[in-house]
Amino acid sequence: MKSYLTISIISFSLCVVQHATSDEPSHNISDYYLKRLVNITTESKPLPPTPSSYGLDSKTGEFKHPSQTPEQTRPQPFPGQLKYWDVNAYIHNMTVEAYYPITVEPFHTWQNIVDFNGRRYLYQYVRRDLKIFDITHPKQAKLLLTKGSTWGKEGPSPEINPFPPGQMIGASTIQWDSVRQRYLMVQAYEVQRFGLLHDKYQEPDKVEAIRSAPHLKGFKVYAMHGPLPHEWELLATRTTDITHPEAPIGKQQGSGVRDIPSFYGKRYMFVASAPSADYALTEYPNDLYSAGYQSWDMSNPESPVFLDQLTVPGQQVNNQWHEHIYQQNPRAGNRTSWMGARMSLFIPSSSDQHQQYGYAAMGGLGFYIVDITSPKHMKTVAHLAFPPSVAGTEGDFIDISQINHTGHVYYSGYPLNEDCWEPYKHIYQIDVSEPYQPQITGTLPRPHPPKTALFTDFCQRRGSFGPKRTGSYTQPGISRKGILPYNFYNAGLQVYDVSNPKKPFISAYFVPPYAPERVHPSAMGNLSHSVYVEYDRNLFWLFTNHGFYLLSSPVLGKPQFDAPKSPWPARD
Image 1 (cartoon, helix red, strand yellow):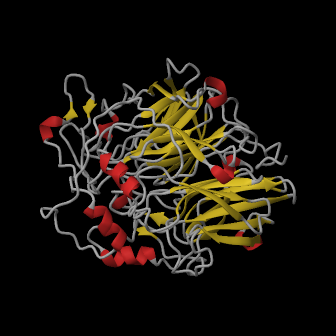
Image 2 (cartoon, rainbow, N blue to C red; image 1 turned 90 degrees about the vertical axis):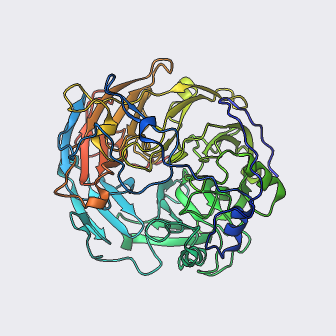
Image 3 (spheres, rainbow, N blue to C red; image 1 turned 180 degrees about the horizontal axis):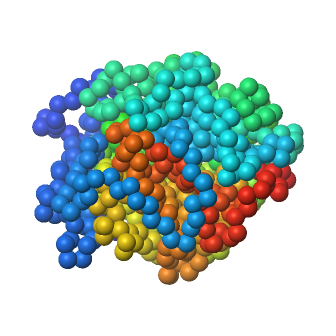
Protein backbone atom coordinates (compact mmCIF):
# COMPACT_ATOMS: atom_id res chain seq x y z
CA MET A 1 0.00 0.00 0.00
CA LYS A 2 1.24 3.47 -0.84
CA SER A 3 2.78 5.45 1.99
CA TYR A 4 1.35 8.84 2.78
CA LEU A 5 1.63 11.69 5.22
CA THR A 6 -1.59 13.29 6.42
CA ILE A 7 -1.43 16.96 7.36
CA SER A 8 -4.64 18.39 8.79
CA ILE A 9 -4.62 22.12 8.15
CA ILE A 10 -8.35 22.62 8.51
CA SER A 11 -9.52 20.52 11.43
CA PHE A 12 -12.86 18.91 11.90
CA SER A 13 -14.15 16.12 14.08
CA LEU A 14 -14.15 12.66 12.53
CA CYS A 15 -17.14 10.56 13.36
CA VAL A 16 -16.61 6.82 13.04
CA VAL A 17 -19.64 5.45 11.24
CA GLN A 18 -20.86 2.12 12.51
CA HIS A 19 -21.99 -0.70 10.24
CA ALA A 20 -25.54 -0.39 9.00
CA THR A 21 -28.21 -2.04 11.08
CA SER A 22 -31.75 -3.20 10.48
CA ASP A 23 -33.06 0.36 10.50
CA GLU A 24 -31.13 1.11 7.28
CA PRO A 25 -33.59 2.47 4.68
CA SER A 26 -34.58 -0.13 2.11
CA HIS A 27 -32.80 0.03 -1.25
CA ASN A 28 -33.29 -1.81 -4.49
CA ILE A 29 -29.68 -2.97 -4.68
CA SER A 30 -28.47 -6.10 -6.42
CA ASP A 31 -24.95 -4.97 -7.36
CA TYR A 32 -22.40 -6.64 -5.08
CA TYR A 33 -20.03 -3.67 -4.75
CA LEU A 34 -22.72 -1.09 -4.19
CA LYS A 35 -24.33 -3.34 -1.62
CA ARG A 36 -21.03 -3.48 0.25
CA LEU A 37 -20.85 0.31 0.37
CA VAL A 38 -24.34 0.46 1.84
CA ASN A 39 -23.62 -2.30 4.33
CA ILE A 40 -20.61 -0.56 5.89
CA THR A 41 -22.22 2.87 6.23
CA THR A 42 -25.28 4.18 7.99
CA GLU A 43 -27.39 6.33 5.72
CA SER A 44 -27.33 9.96 6.79
CA LYS A 45 -28.51 12.07 3.88
CA PRO A 46 -28.43 15.81 4.47
CA LEU A 47 -31.86 17.16 5.33
CA PRO A 48 -33.29 20.16 3.49
CA PRO A 49 -32.35 23.29 5.47
CA THR A 50 -35.02 25.29 7.23
CA PRO A 51 -35.87 28.50 5.30
CA SER A 52 -34.78 30.66 8.23
CA SER A 53 -31.26 29.16 8.27
CA TYR A 54 -30.16 30.63 4.94
CA GLY A 55 -31.11 33.29 2.42
CA LEU A 56 -30.67 36.95 1.56
CA ASP A 57 -29.85 39.35 4.37
CA SER A 58 -32.00 42.41 3.61
CA LYS A 59 -29.68 44.66 5.64
CA THR A 60 -26.36 43.73 4.06
CA GLY A 61 -27.63 42.52 0.68
CA GLU A 62 -25.49 39.39 1.01
CA PHE A 63 -26.65 35.80 0.71
CA LYS A 64 -26.05 33.31 3.51
CA HIS A 65 -25.56 29.82 2.13
CA PRO A 66 -27.05 26.71 3.76
CA SER A 67 -24.63 24.69 5.87
CA GLN A 68 -25.54 21.51 3.99
CA THR A 69 -28.17 20.30 1.53
CA PRO A 70 -29.13 17.16 -0.33
CA GLU A 71 -28.47 16.89 -4.05
CA GLN A 72 -31.21 18.66 -5.99
CA THR A 73 -31.94 19.02 -9.70
CA ARG A 74 -34.81 21.51 -9.37
CA PRO A 75 -34.63 25.27 -8.77
CA GLN A 76 -34.81 26.44 -5.15
CA PRO A 77 -36.11 30.03 -5.23
CA PHE A 78 -35.86 32.24 -2.13
CA PRO A 79 -37.25 35.65 -1.08
CA GLY A 80 -35.33 38.44 -2.79
CA GLN A 81 -34.36 36.39 -5.82
CA LEU A 82 -35.12 37.76 -9.28
CA LYS A 83 -38.35 36.39 -10.76
CA TYR A 84 -37.03 36.65 -14.32
CA TRP A 85 -33.88 35.71 -16.23
CA ASP A 86 -31.56 38.71 -16.26
CA VAL A 87 -30.80 39.62 -19.90
CA ASN A 88 -28.29 42.32 -19.00
CA ALA A 89 -24.53 41.91 -19.34
CA TYR A 90 -21.94 43.35 -16.94
CA ILE A 91 -18.35 44.06 -17.85
CA HIS A 92 -15.25 45.57 -16.24
CA ASN A 93 -11.78 45.97 -17.74
CA MET A 94 -12.78 43.73 -20.66
CA THR A 95 -14.01 44.00 -24.24
CA VAL A 96 -16.38 41.68 -26.09
CA GLU A 97 -14.64 41.15 -29.42
CA ALA A 98 -17.12 38.67 -30.93
CA TYR A 99 -20.07 36.43 -30.09
CA TYR A 100 -21.04 33.17 -31.83
CA PRO A 101 -24.57 31.85 -31.13
CA ILE A 102 -23.65 28.18 -31.63
CA THR A 103 -24.15 25.70 -28.80
CA VAL A 104 -22.55 22.25 -28.84
CA GLU A 105 -24.09 21.47 -25.45
CA PRO A 106 -25.24 23.84 -22.71
CA PHE A 107 -24.13 21.85 -19.67
CA HIS A 108 -20.47 20.98 -20.20
CA THR A 109 -17.93 20.85 -23.04
CA TRP A 110 -14.19 20.39 -23.47
CA GLN A 111 -11.99 22.48 -25.75
CA ASN A 112 -8.69 22.09 -27.57
CA ILE A 113 -6.76 24.37 -29.91
CA VAL A 114 -4.29 23.11 -32.50
CA ASP A 115 -2.52 24.70 -35.49
CA PHE A 116 -2.02 23.13 -38.92
CA ASN A 117 -0.22 24.82 -41.81
CA GLY A 118 -0.54 28.32 -40.40
CA ARG A 119 -4.23 28.01 -39.48
CA ARG A 120 -5.69 27.68 -35.96
CA TYR A 121 -8.54 25.32 -35.10
CA LEU A 122 -10.81 25.24 -32.05
CA TYR A 123 -12.41 21.95 -31.02
CA GLN A 124 -15.48 22.09 -28.78
CA TYR A 125 -16.99 18.75 -27.86
CA VAL A 126 -18.55 16.38 -25.36
CA ARG A 127 -18.81 12.65 -26.05
CA ARG A 128 -20.85 12.27 -29.28
CA ASP A 129 -21.14 16.01 -30.02
CA LEU A 130 -18.26 17.80 -31.76
CA LYS A 131 -17.76 21.07 -33.62
CA ILE A 132 -14.53 22.24 -35.24
CA PHE A 133 -14.00 25.95 -35.90
CA ASP A 134 -11.33 27.76 -37.89
CA ILE A 135 -10.31 30.60 -35.56
CA THR A 136 -7.22 31.75 -37.45
CA HIS A 137 -8.93 35.13 -37.52
CA PRO A 138 -10.86 34.95 -34.25
CA LYS A 139 -13.29 37.76 -35.07
CA GLN A 140 -14.38 35.80 -38.15
CA ALA A 141 -14.50 32.26 -36.78
CA LYS A 142 -15.88 29.68 -39.22
CA LEU A 143 -17.67 26.44 -38.38
CA LEU A 144 -16.01 23.68 -40.43
CA LEU A 145 -17.55 20.47 -39.15
CA THR A 146 -20.36 19.19 -36.93
CA LYS A 147 -20.81 15.69 -35.57
CA GLY A 148 -23.76 14.86 -33.36
CA SER A 149 -26.28 17.37 -32.02
CA THR A 150 -26.60 21.15 -31.77
CA TRP A 151 -28.56 22.60 -28.86
CA GLY A 152 -31.15 25.34 -29.03
CA LYS A 153 -34.46 26.48 -27.58
CA GLU A 154 -36.04 23.08 -28.25
CA GLY A 155 -33.12 21.11 -26.84
CA PRO A 156 -30.69 18.93 -28.82
CA SER A 157 -31.19 18.54 -32.56
CA PRO A 158 -31.16 15.10 -34.21
CA GLU A 159 -27.62 13.84 -34.75
CA ILE A 160 -25.96 14.64 -38.04
CA ASN A 161 -22.77 13.04 -39.32
CA PRO A 162 -22.80 10.84 -36.19
CA PHE A 163 -20.00 8.84 -34.64
CA PRO A 164 -20.39 5.07 -35.11
CA PRO A 165 -22.03 3.24 -32.17
CA GLY A 166 -19.66 2.87 -29.23
CA GLN A 167 -17.41 5.68 -30.43
CA MET A 168 -17.16 9.34 -29.41
CA ILE A 169 -14.57 12.05 -28.86
CA GLY A 170 -13.44 11.87 -25.27
CA ALA A 171 -11.69 14.56 -23.22
CA SER A 172 -8.42 14.97 -25.09
CA THR A 173 -4.90 16.22 -24.87
CA ILE A 174 -3.11 17.11 -28.11
CA GLN A 175 0.68 17.33 -27.95
CA TRP A 176 3.65 17.45 -30.31
CA ASP A 177 5.65 14.22 -30.70
CA SER A 178 9.12 15.66 -31.29
CA VAL A 179 10.61 12.23 -32.02
CA ARG A 180 8.21 11.44 -34.86
CA GLN A 181 7.41 15.07 -35.80
CA ARG A 182 3.62 14.81 -35.54
CA TYR A 183 0.73 15.68 -33.28
CA LEU A 184 -0.57 13.04 -30.91
CA MET A 185 -4.11 13.09 -29.54
CA VAL A 186 -5.00 10.99 -26.50
CA GLN A 187 -8.75 10.63 -25.97
CA ALA A 188 -10.25 9.58 -22.63
CA TYR A 189 -13.06 7.01 -22.71
CA GLU A 190 -15.10 7.23 -19.51
CA VAL A 191 -18.32 5.50 -18.52
CA GLN A 192 -21.44 7.54 -19.14
CA ARG A 193 -23.37 8.76 -16.09
CA PHE A 194 -25.52 11.77 -16.95
CA GLY A 195 -28.48 10.87 -19.07
CA LEU A 196 -28.24 7.24 -17.97
CA LEU A 197 -28.03 6.92 -14.18
CA HIS A 198 -29.81 9.16 -11.67
CA ASP A 199 -29.78 7.19 -8.42
CA LYS A 200 -27.54 4.14 -8.15
CA TYR A 201 -29.27 3.16 -4.91
CA GLN A 202 -32.59 2.69 -6.70
CA GLU A 203 -31.78 1.78 -10.32
CA PRO A 204 -30.13 -1.67 -10.52
CA ASP A 205 -30.69 -2.03 -14.26
CA LYS A 206 -28.79 1.18 -14.98
CA VAL A 207 -25.99 0.19 -12.61
CA GLU A 208 -25.59 -3.02 -14.56
CA ALA A 209 -25.69 -1.09 -17.85
CA ILE A 210 -22.69 0.97 -16.70
CA ARG A 211 -20.79 -2.08 -15.46
CA SER A 212 -21.16 -3.67 -18.92
CA ALA A 213 -20.98 -0.46 -20.98
CA PRO A 214 -20.78 -1.17 -24.74
CA HIS A 215 -17.73 1.03 -25.25
CA LEU A 216 -14.06 1.19 -24.31
CA LYS A 217 -13.11 1.94 -20.71
CA GLY A 218 -9.68 3.47 -21.15
CA PHE A 219 -8.06 5.67 -23.80
CA LYS A 220 -7.20 5.88 -27.49
CA VAL A 221 -4.09 7.33 -29.10
CA TYR A 222 -4.24 9.01 -32.52
CA ALA A 223 -1.73 10.55 -34.88
CA MET A 224 -3.26 13.77 -36.22
CA HIS A 225 -2.27 14.27 -39.86
CA GLY A 226 -4.73 17.14 -40.23
CA PRO A 227 -7.45 19.00 -38.34
CA LEU A 228 -10.45 16.85 -39.34
CA PRO A 229 -11.40 13.41 -37.95
CA HIS A 230 -10.89 11.57 -41.24
CA GLU A 231 -7.24 12.66 -41.03
CA TRP A 232 -6.67 11.04 -37.65
CA GLU A 233 -4.90 7.67 -37.54
CA LEU A 234 -5.70 5.35 -34.63
CA LEU A 235 -2.40 4.14 -33.16
CA ALA A 236 -3.41 2.35 -29.96
CA THR A 237 -6.36 1.42 -27.76
CA ARG A 238 -5.91 0.58 -24.07
CA THR A 239 -8.25 -0.30 -21.26
CA THR A 240 -7.59 0.93 -17.74
CA ASP A 241 -8.88 -2.43 -16.48
CA ILE A 242 -5.31 -3.40 -15.62
CA THR A 243 -6.31 -6.78 -14.18
CA HIS A 244 -7.95 -7.83 -17.45
CA PRO A 245 -6.06 -5.89 -20.16
CA GLU A 246 -7.40 -8.17 -22.90
CA ALA A 247 -11.03 -7.91 -21.78
CA PRO A 248 -13.39 -7.17 -24.68
CA ILE A 249 -15.84 -4.28 -24.83
CA GLY A 250 -18.67 -4.95 -22.40
CA LYS A 251 -16.46 -6.96 -20.05
CA GLN A 252 -13.97 -4.27 -19.04
CA GLN A 253 -14.16 -3.15 -15.43
CA GLY A 254 -13.82 0.25 -13.82
CA SER A 255 -14.48 3.85 -14.77
CA GLY A 256 -12.27 4.27 -17.81
CA VAL A 257 -10.21 7.48 -18.01
CA ARG A 258 -11.73 10.55 -16.40
CA ASP A 259 -11.35 13.94 -18.04
CA ILE A 260 -8.20 15.12 -19.85
CA PRO A 261 -5.11 12.88 -19.53
CA SER A 262 -1.97 14.58 -18.19
CA PHE A 263 0.50 14.17 -21.04
CA TYR A 264 3.02 16.56 -22.60
CA GLY A 265 3.99 14.46 -25.62
CA LYS A 266 7.07 12.97 -23.95
CA ARG A 267 7.52 9.72 -22.10
CA TYR A 268 4.98 9.57 -19.27
CA MET A 269 1.23 10.01 -19.07
CA PHE A 270 -0.98 10.14 -15.98
CA VAL A 271 -4.72 9.52 -15.96
CA ALA A 272 -7.53 9.42 -13.40
CA SER A 273 -9.14 6.00 -13.32
CA ALA A 274 -10.74 3.37 -11.12
CA PRO A 275 -9.42 0.10 -12.55
CA SER A 276 -12.09 -2.20 -11.12
CA ALA A 277 -15.52 -2.36 -9.53
CA ASP A 278 -14.14 -2.62 -5.99
CA TYR A 279 -13.15 1.09 -6.17
CA ALA A 280 -16.70 1.67 -4.97
CA LEU A 281 -16.37 3.91 -1.91
CA THR A 282 -18.15 7.00 -3.16
CA GLU A 283 -21.49 8.37 -2.07
CA TYR A 284 -22.43 10.31 -5.19
CA PRO A 285 -25.73 8.90 -6.49
CA ASN A 286 -24.90 8.76 -10.21
CA ASP A 287 -21.31 7.53 -9.98
CA LEU A 288 -20.11 4.02 -9.17
CA TYR A 289 -16.35 4.58 -8.89
CA SER A 290 -13.79 6.30 -6.67
CA ALA A 291 -10.95 6.93 -9.10
CA GLY A 292 -7.26 6.93 -8.28
CA TYR A 293 -4.42 7.55 -10.73
CA GLN A 294 -2.54 5.48 -13.28
CA SER A 295 0.84 6.13 -14.90
CA TRP A 296 1.64 4.93 -18.44
CA ASP A 297 4.83 4.79 -20.50
CA MET A 298 4.15 6.47 -23.85
CA SER A 299 7.65 6.09 -25.29
CA ASN A 300 6.06 4.19 -28.16
CA PRO A 301 2.63 5.78 -28.74
CA GLU A 302 1.57 2.71 -30.69
CA SER A 303 2.12 0.51 -27.65
CA PRO A 304 1.47 2.31 -24.32
CA VAL A 305 2.64 0.35 -21.27
CA PHE A 306 0.95 0.47 -17.87
CA LEU A 307 3.31 1.35 -15.01
CA ASP A 308 1.48 1.92 -11.71
CA GLN A 309 -1.86 2.47 -9.98
CA LEU A 310 -2.00 5.01 -7.14
CA THR A 311 -4.75 4.36 -4.60
CA VAL A 312 -5.31 6.55 -1.55
CA PRO A 313 -6.86 5.42 1.74
CA GLY A 314 -10.61 4.97 1.69
CA GLN A 315 -11.34 3.92 -1.89
CA GLN A 316 -11.84 0.14 -2.04
CA VAL A 317 -14.50 -2.17 -0.67
CA ASN A 318 -13.58 -5.61 0.64
CA ASN A 319 -10.40 -4.15 2.10
CA GLN A 320 -10.61 -3.77 5.88
CA TRP A 321 -8.16 -0.90 6.04
CA HIS A 322 -9.78 1.09 3.21
CA GLU A 323 -13.23 0.53 4.65
CA HIS A 324 -12.12 1.61 8.13
CA ILE A 325 -10.56 4.82 6.80
CA TYR A 326 -13.70 5.52 4.77
CA GLN A 327 -15.97 5.04 7.77
CA GLN A 328 -14.06 7.77 9.61
CA ASN A 329 -14.79 10.30 6.88
CA PRO A 330 -17.71 12.53 8.00
CA ARG A 331 -19.24 12.15 4.51
CA ALA A 332 -19.62 8.37 4.79
CA GLY A 333 -23.26 7.44 4.37
CA ASN A 334 -24.52 10.82 3.18
CA ARG A 335 -25.35 9.40 -0.29
CA THR A 336 -24.37 12.77 -1.77
CA SER A 337 -20.58 13.38 -1.79
CA TRP A 338 -18.23 12.80 -4.70
CA MET A 339 -15.21 10.79 -3.55
CA GLY A 340 -12.05 10.19 -5.56
CA ALA A 341 -10.55 11.88 -8.60
CA ARG A 342 -12.60 13.67 -11.24
CA MET A 343 -9.59 14.89 -13.21
CA SER A 344 -6.07 13.61 -13.83
CA LEU A 345 -3.06 14.67 -11.78
CA PHE A 346 -2.18 18.33 -12.20
CA ILE A 347 1.46 18.34 -13.23
CA PRO A 348 3.84 21.16 -14.24
CA SER A 349 5.03 20.91 -17.84
CA SER A 350 8.54 19.84 -16.82
CA SER A 351 7.15 16.58 -15.47
CA ASP A 352 9.78 14.40 -17.17
CA GLN A 353 12.55 15.96 -15.11
CA HIS A 354 13.86 14.72 -11.77
CA GLN A 355 12.05 15.36 -8.46
CA GLN A 356 8.64 16.34 -9.71
CA TYR A 357 5.29 16.39 -7.96
CA GLY A 358 1.73 16.01 -9.14
CA TYR A 359 -1.25 17.53 -7.35
CA ALA A 360 -4.44 15.57 -6.80
CA ALA A 361 -8.00 16.83 -6.22
CA MET A 362 -10.04 13.95 -4.86
CA GLY A 363 -13.40 15.38 -3.84
CA GLY A 364 -14.39 14.41 -0.33
CA LEU A 365 -11.05 12.60 0.09
CA GLY A 366 -9.20 15.92 -0.08
CA PHE A 367 -5.98 17.26 -1.59
CA TYR A 368 -2.84 15.16 -2.11
CA ILE A 369 0.68 15.85 -3.25
CA VAL A 370 2.10 12.92 -5.22
CA ASP A 371 5.77 12.18 -5.80
CA ILE A 372 6.04 11.08 -9.44
CA THR A 373 9.85 11.06 -9.62
CA SER A 374 9.54 7.36 -10.41
CA PRO A 375 6.29 6.88 -12.35
CA LYS A 376 6.58 3.15 -11.75
CA HIS A 377 6.30 3.82 -8.01
CA MET A 378 4.06 6.83 -7.39
CA LYS A 379 3.56 7.75 -3.76
CA THR A 380 1.67 10.39 -1.82
CA VAL A 381 3.74 12.64 0.41
CA ALA A 382 1.15 15.03 1.88
CA HIS A 383 -2.58 15.33 2.39
CA LEU A 384 -4.99 18.10 3.32
CA ALA A 385 -8.48 17.35 4.60
CA PHE A 386 -11.28 19.90 4.23
CA PRO A 387 -14.55 20.34 6.11
CA PRO A 388 -17.58 18.92 4.29
CA SER A 389 -19.24 21.23 1.76
CA VAL A 390 -22.31 19.25 0.76
CA ALA A 391 -23.96 19.24 -1.78
CA GLY A 392 -21.82 20.01 -4.81
CA THR A 393 -18.39 18.79 -5.85
CA GLU A 394 -15.93 19.52 -3.06
CA GLY A 395 -12.64 19.38 -4.93
CA ASP A 396 -12.01 18.46 -8.57
CA PHE A 397 -9.69 21.16 -9.92
CA ILE A 398 -6.25 22.59 -9.10
CA ASP A 399 -4.70 25.56 -10.85
CA ILE A 400 -0.92 25.07 -10.83
CA SER A 401 0.02 28.05 -13.02
CA GLN A 402 1.46 30.12 -10.15
CA ILE A 403 3.78 27.55 -8.55
CA ASN A 404 6.94 29.07 -10.00
CA HIS A 405 5.83 32.61 -9.08
CA THR A 406 4.45 32.34 -5.55
CA GLY A 407 4.65 28.65 -4.62
CA HIS A 408 0.84 28.48 -4.50
CA VAL A 409 -1.75 26.24 -6.09
CA TYR A 410 -5.51 26.92 -6.11
CA TYR A 411 -7.90 24.12 -5.14
CA SER A 412 -11.66 24.17 -5.72
CA GLY A 413 -14.84 22.26 -6.39
CA TYR A 414 -17.98 23.55 -8.06
CA PRO A 415 -21.71 23.90 -7.37
CA LEU A 416 -24.25 21.32 -8.51
CA ASN A 417 -27.48 22.69 -7.04
CA GLU A 418 -29.06 25.84 -8.43
CA ASP A 419 -29.97 29.05 -6.60
CA CYS A 420 -27.06 28.71 -4.14
CA TRP A 421 -28.90 25.90 -2.38
CA GLU A 422 -25.66 24.43 -1.03
CA PRO A 423 -22.54 25.71 0.76
CA TYR A 424 -20.45 28.19 -1.22
CA LYS A 425 -17.52 26.54 -2.98
CA HIS A 426 -14.36 28.33 -1.88
CA ILE A 427 -11.19 28.55 -3.96
CA TYR A 428 -8.44 27.63 -1.49
CA GLN A 429 -4.93 29.06 -1.73
CA ILE A 430 -2.38 26.38 -0.83
CA ASP A 431 1.32 27.06 -0.40
CA VAL A 432 3.13 23.96 -1.71
CA SER A 433 6.66 25.37 -1.64
CA GLU A 434 7.37 22.73 1.03
CA PRO A 435 5.80 19.65 -0.61
CA TYR A 436 5.73 17.61 2.60
CA GLN A 437 4.09 20.44 4.53
CA PRO A 438 1.53 22.29 2.39
CA GLN A 439 -0.26 25.16 4.06
CA ILE A 440 -3.65 26.70 3.34
CA THR A 441 -3.04 30.45 3.29
CA GLY A 442 -6.52 31.73 2.49
CA THR A 443 -9.35 31.75 -0.03
CA LEU A 444 -10.03 33.92 -3.05
CA PRO A 445 -12.69 36.64 -2.59
CA ARG A 446 -16.27 35.90 -3.57
CA PRO A 447 -17.40 37.84 -6.67
CA HIS A 448 -20.03 40.54 -6.20
CA PRO A 449 -22.23 42.17 -8.83
CA PRO A 450 -21.60 45.78 -9.87
CA LYS A 451 -23.66 48.57 -8.30
CA THR A 452 -25.53 48.99 -11.58
CA ALA A 453 -27.12 45.55 -11.23
CA LEU A 454 -30.64 45.19 -9.84
CA PHE A 455 -29.37 42.65 -7.32
CA THR A 456 -26.71 42.72 -4.62
CA ASP A 457 -25.59 39.08 -4.64
CA PHE A 458 -25.13 36.73 -7.58
CA CYS A 459 -27.30 34.15 -5.81
CA GLN A 460 -30.24 36.43 -6.62
CA ARG A 461 -29.53 36.14 -10.35
CA ARG A 462 -30.85 32.54 -10.48
CA GLY A 463 -29.08 29.44 -11.70
CA SER A 464 -25.74 28.12 -10.45
CA PHE A 465 -23.11 30.35 -8.85
CA GLY A 466 -19.58 29.36 -7.97
CA PRO A 467 -16.18 28.57 -9.48
CA LYS A 468 -15.59 25.95 -12.14
CA ARG A 469 -12.08 25.99 -13.65
CA THR A 470 -9.45 28.27 -15.19
CA GLY A 471 -9.28 26.25 -18.39
CA SER A 472 -6.74 23.53 -19.13
CA TYR A 473 -3.01 22.99 -19.35
CA THR A 474 -3.60 22.49 -23.10
CA GLN A 475 -4.30 26.23 -23.62
CA PRO A 476 -1.98 27.94 -26.16
CA GLY A 477 1.01 29.78 -24.80
CA ILE A 478 2.12 30.21 -21.22
CA SER A 479 -0.17 31.02 -18.29
CA ARG A 480 0.25 34.58 -17.10
CA LYS A 481 1.97 35.48 -13.85
CA GLY A 482 -0.58 36.55 -11.25
CA ILE A 483 -3.66 35.94 -13.44
CA LEU A 484 -6.37 33.33 -12.69
CA PRO A 485 -9.41 33.43 -15.03
CA TYR A 486 -12.22 31.42 -13.40
CA ASN A 487 -15.50 30.60 -15.04
CA PHE A 488 -18.18 31.29 -12.40
CA TYR A 489 -21.46 30.03 -13.92
CA ASN A 490 -24.03 32.86 -13.57
CA ALA A 491 -21.22 35.32 -12.79
CA GLY A 492 -19.47 34.53 -16.08
CA LEU A 493 -15.72 35.08 -16.32
CA GLN A 494 -14.04 36.45 -13.18
CA VAL A 495 -10.33 37.23 -13.51
CA TYR A 496 -8.35 37.22 -10.26
CA ASP A 497 -5.08 39.01 -9.66
CA VAL A 498 -3.07 36.78 -7.31
CA SER A 499 0.30 38.47 -7.74
CA ASN A 500 0.27 38.98 -3.99
CA PRO A 501 -1.39 35.92 -2.39
CA LYS A 502 -2.03 37.98 0.74
CA LYS A 503 -4.19 40.44 -1.21
CA PRO A 504 -5.95 38.70 -4.12
CA PHE A 505 -8.60 40.70 -5.95
CA ILE A 506 -10.80 40.58 -9.07
CA SER A 507 -9.18 42.68 -11.79
CA ALA A 508 -11.62 42.11 -14.66
CA TYR A 509 -14.90 40.37 -15.42
CA PHE A 510 -17.53 39.69 -18.04
CA VAL A 511 -20.95 38.51 -16.89
CA PRO A 512 -22.96 37.42 -19.96
CA PRO A 513 -26.70 37.88 -20.32
CA TYR A 514 -29.19 35.09 -20.01
CA ALA A 515 -30.78 34.25 -23.36
CA PRO A 516 -34.19 32.61 -22.76
CA GLU A 517 -35.00 32.81 -26.46
CA ARG A 518 -32.05 30.52 -27.31
CA VAL A 519 -31.88 28.06 -24.41
CA HIS A 520 -33.94 25.03 -23.45
CA PRO A 521 -35.59 25.52 -20.02
CA SER A 522 -33.66 22.57 -18.55
CA ALA A 523 -30.36 24.34 -19.22
CA MET A 524 -31.22 27.94 -18.30
CA GLY A 525 -29.50 27.84 -14.90
CA ASN A 526 -26.16 26.71 -16.37
CA LEU A 527 -25.22 30.08 -17.87
CA SER A 528 -21.47 29.63 -18.46
CA HIS A 529 -19.49 26.45 -18.00
CA SER A 530 -15.96 26.93 -19.33
CA VAL A 531 -13.22 29.40 -20.16
CA TYR A 532 -10.34 28.66 -22.54
CA VAL A 533 -7.48 31.10 -22.99
CA GLU A 534 -5.14 31.85 -25.87
CA TYR A 535 -2.24 33.22 -23.87
CA ASP A 536 -0.17 33.55 -27.02
CA ARG A 537 -2.76 35.94 -28.58
CA ASN A 538 -4.12 37.43 -25.32
CA LEU A 539 -7.69 36.20 -25.89
CA PHE A 540 -10.35 34.63 -23.69
CA TRP A 541 -13.02 32.26 -25.02
CA LEU A 542 -16.06 31.94 -22.72
CA PHE A 543 -18.50 29.09 -23.38
CA THR A 544 -22.14 29.54 -22.32
CA ASN A 545 -25.49 27.83 -22.74
CA HIS A 546 -26.35 30.12 -25.67
CA GLY A 547 -23.04 30.16 -27.59
CA PHE A 548 -19.52 31.44 -26.95
CA TYR A 549 -17.80 34.81 -26.57
CA LEU A 550 -14.40 36.13 -27.62
CA LEU A 551 -13.01 38.54 -25.01
CA SER A 552 -9.92 40.64 -24.45
CA SER A 553 -8.59 42.50 -21.42
CA PRO A 554 -5.58 44.67 -20.53
CA VAL A 555 -4.78 42.17 -17.78
CA LEU A 556 -3.58 39.80 -20.52
CA GLY A 557 -2.13 42.43 -22.81
CA LYS A 558 -2.93 43.75 -26.27
CA PRO A 559 -5.04 41.21 -28.18
CA GLN A 560 -3.70 39.76 -31.43
CA PHE A 561 -6.23 39.03 -34.17
CA ASP A 562 -3.84 37.91 -36.92
CA ALA A 563 -2.80 34.33 -37.49
CA PRO A 564 -0.62 32.93 -34.68
CA LYS A 565 3.08 33.57 -35.04
CA SER A 566 4.12 30.15 -33.69
CA PRO A 567 2.21 26.86 -33.96
CA TRP A 568 0.46 25.29 -31.01
CA PRO A 569 1.05 22.85 -29.43
CA ALA A 570 4.65 24.03 -29.24
CA ARG A 571 7.12 22.05 -31.34
CA ASP A 572 10.29 21.56 -29.33
